[in-house]
Image (cartoon, rainbow, N blue to C red; front, side):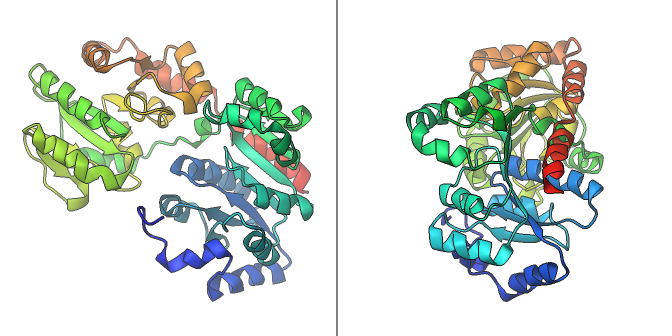
Length: 400
């Protein structure tokens, strides 16, 4: 929290001490005879998942109000774009009995929805005690968490049995939940919400093209430390072959942008930094260090590398550039998107490389001829949409 910053105005939320305006808003909603649906999400990806669920819900119930909670300042910034005037945005209380109890005493939700892997024991126990319907959507169990869940299965069995329904991303996620003694009859495999979440942003694409200018683009999306250095090195060699080539790097964490810029300058290249409003320059690397513009960049990239997959583990979301019909590459470490990668690889819609050498070789091949990779990527994403509507139908049937 100290490193990320941005909490000072709402730190009290973590202790269920909310601003008077928030308390008044919640009570006004309740006094009108309505009740809130509490949705919790943390990362940018989870917030997008929650946001898509909320949008679909509003289409069916135009008067529904949400209490959206998150625990990160990054998640908060994204959540601000998802909530409407009749919704409430808060930081989730710390998972201690007194704070959780106070939060529920105020909010009194009619249903609670958690996203992906947000398993908070005290929070969940309180929902169960109050007999509130509880759902886990887009559920996944990572390679790292699976053995821990299995080892502590007798403890987790009480937690998972508290859910009304669990919507899992894949058969593997379901198997891992069952191994942790989650009731099998409560788990439904639906696929990933993230196929539904991805949306092109043509206005932002136009804005990004004006910023970068003409020419072919090699884009590093949501990169992690070490990956920017690899891309800079690859770009320096490719530039001698493709004179119009431009490199754009969008680091996953903007607080790392200074380090990325230092690596660009160290390579003898100039840096055009989005947050500074720098003007385009020749032989420069474009550093996109602002919020909410990655989809615009994916729309204009020619070849896209998705980060946290070459020098780090887990990967970032590769569905978005695939939707845009781009030639997409990832490294060998895509554990957090296992079912998604399985679908994309089976459709020959993405390229997975093992190291820097293979990355450069495949980029060269794709610039020469992508073999229809981008078209297959778009079709693969479109084919797997509809997960959100399916889950929402089940939730709303119980919420009547």
